[in-house]
Length: 395
Image 1 (tube, rainbow, N blue to C red):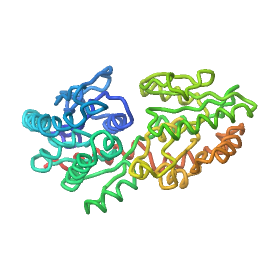
Image 2: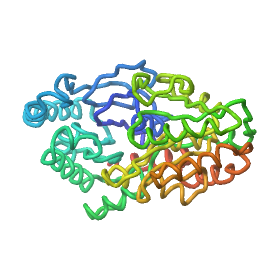
Image 3: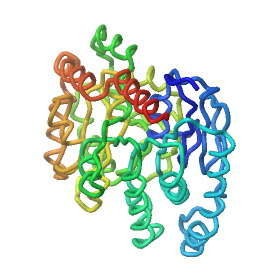
Image 4: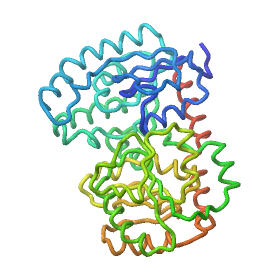
């Protein structure tokens, strides 16, 4: 057994090459981990190009038709809870017995929580847990409050029994401490790599003919995003330069009523390296959360990883969110862009008109972008601490 890189089993819902911020964080944190020392267990198969390699990928497959979306919600939930979870629990136990990992890294997400909670707290080896979000962020309206509460309780149990822990942001870590009595040793999110810091140190202002605003990933807070689009539609007519919105991600939005083909460009899903290069060609990033408190758990205990991607590309950020949201808390600590906490269209438009009209935005925001990236999101530091935590669990 290699103590610096023990044989690791990653156990979660998504496959090694899944899209989205959470999977990207996991791959980034595993940079440098030998593929032959890495086993992956998930509920979903890989459907992307397998650029991230593992020694073995074991799948407790959930058929797409079983996912509760719009139809037959209660029967699907019952099947997942009472039938699939039993089979997945056996599948996970067999995976652990067959591959004999030295340590397990659990990232509990949605339905994977059911088998993880039955297997990991009672067995060996020990496990490290990373909490990226809560089930209620995505599932409550689809599966009901009773099932969501059960998943929340099981996640708390997993967190409490883990040998070591981390969370996606400090607000979540504080909430988990109040709920379980256990502290997160670390805060891990998407990170800024050494090559990104090197780029930021030598970055020069971009003074193009148009103002390019980027949105990376899924538009989760769509109501907020639509409000921004409506304000930009009016503001762009008052600016000396044109405005473009560049959308990066797997989802297609051109059929949405708010999509404006004359100034919005969809780039589709991009590799992590291509996304890095594309973002560097933009002027601003936009990180929207909900401006109301109707979904407080999402606002207060989630931090979009797109925020870090913008910092790594040297983009000042248009931050939209309720005053209690994590992204607004971060933007208050570091003055790296425009903070919009009010859904009053006039206030939003005044702020956008003032800031988007500036020319040398890099000079204004450079120091705070670098300070935030170094203090909060240094990828090398986070990766080193995670690897040490995983190695420490080996007996």
